[in-house]
Amino acid sequence: MTVKTEYNYATKLKEVLKTGSEPYLMTGDQYKESLRDGRRIIDSEGEEIKDPVTHPHLKRGVETIARIYDQQFNAETKDFSTYLDKDGKRYNTGWKVPTTLEDLQIKRKMLKANTYESFGVFGRPNDYGPYMALGFLAVIDKIEAEDPQRADNIRKFVEFSQKHNIISADLIVDPQTDRTIPRTERKGQLRIVEERPDGVILQGAKSCGSIAAQAHFVTISTVLSPGLDEDAAIWAAVPINSEGLTIALREPVTRLDNNSFDDHPLDSRVGEEVDGMLIFDNVFLPNELIFSKGNLELLNYYNESGGLFHWHILSRLAYRAEIFAGVVQTIIDVLGTGSIAGVRDKASDVFAYAIALKSHIEAAENEAELENGVLVPSRSIITAGRLHSIERYPEIMHILRDLSGQGLISRFTKKTWDHPDVGKKLDEYLPGTGVTAREKNRFFNFLWDLTTSSHAGRVALFENLNATNAPVVRKDFYNIYDRSESVNHIRDFLNLPKIEG
Image (cartoon, rainbow, N blue to C red; front, side, top):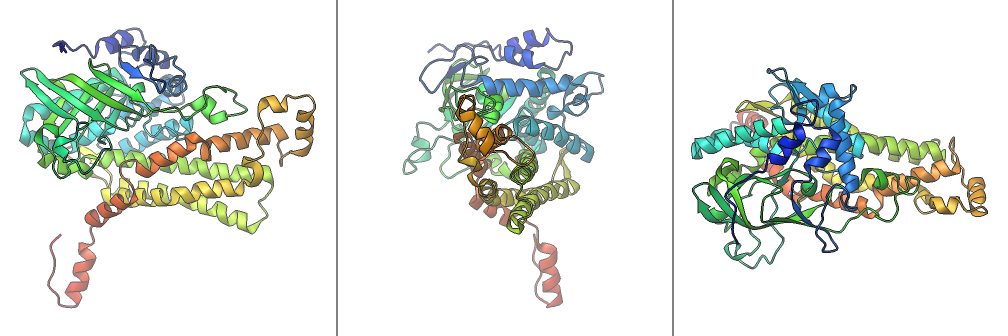
């Protein structure tokens, strides 16, 4: 195929930003328009999506993201969702480089608002995308040693992203394939197949592109594994509307044929981030968007570059845990089961889960350290919190379902309630404590969406695998937790040789 040498990935963004009142912020409507940039998306029916804003697989998720964009202009939220820079202009807080504890706390305040807006079912909300690029800044000395120009590319990309209010998805995972095939021979491995004076040509794929179809860029990093070739070692940013890039979406897990708020309060309003595989068919990537290539040594620094996005992941889970605490209390309230000791015990487990995650976040922030001018929360504390969150999550979901009793089973649709004979009987037979039967039914329909539906199952799978699963996190924790002081104290007391590190 013929590859264009021009790259106009910012043209649509610039056009959209010109239509607003703020030069570096987009409203929800501007965000929607920014997605109409020529990107190529194939839905689960095998059809090419003509408009990502109105397509039924994407539109509810797009609407949720648009509402989060609008928080930048809301008097109650703009002071933490945006910030005033030294130039007197307002930018999105997600792209602010954190240098102080207050920066992290304000970012987390924005994250809380985003999580409450989506009830945490978006694993990659608007403000998640910056953290891979900001993580690159945290290890920029290592990139500088490779190539000062590429280090400068990272700085310029962060500045570009600040000024264009973009959403960036991160791509790390390679396609799941036959592992008996050597890495160098796997067809799906994303790699550089041609180098040109002005950039490179990419071929292959990346999996699990959460929110990519609803974003503007994807930020790519490769994780080191045995047998990786230098041409597959790349850190870069790729515009979603790049020629030759196709996003193949998974099937949706929210119902498309029922938009009733009463029947599916969460799914009908929030929608979903739709994962997809990104297929690169001779995609041209300009030099300015390449941050590292061919450097296998750099790929060992996943934990170092991932400190901020791991902090974001755990923070979002902590706010989801707060929502779960509110859910469990609402179950108790509408069923009138608060006098049962076993119910209170199980509710306390949910409350303790929320407190534990919050405590990990605050402790990690209090022990944060500046790395190349970027304040990064304690990796060991964040890793311990991630491990706790992953391992307890299924149990918390079970508690919410268990305390609901038949509430999650005896659920009825709005059409059933509207039946002239049946509805009256349901109103009479199924009232809750302090709520009508219909109100109780709406709550348990919401709880179904949150804990039991196909969407809930997808979110649970995502949380388990997001930024590595429990066995890998446990291994990482063993390697990074610093116990040298206590070990040497014991050795010193017993006159044993001290150890280093």
